[in-house]
Image (cartoon, one colour):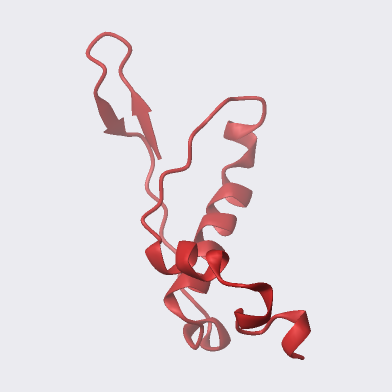
Length: 81
């Protein structure tokens, strides 16, 4: 989590989070792990974020690529089951 300094318009870190994936989660591809990590962070930090406008910046090209695929091409989609 970063906060922008109002006077200098620079960002500085205000909080770091670390997590460990369980055995089932370790088998997921990079896109799913990226999305899962974001959801875990948002859930953990929700008390600080509630009612505050914020921007999520994430480098997840694989996730963007998967979301742009047709629904039948997504791995584990309901259509494929």
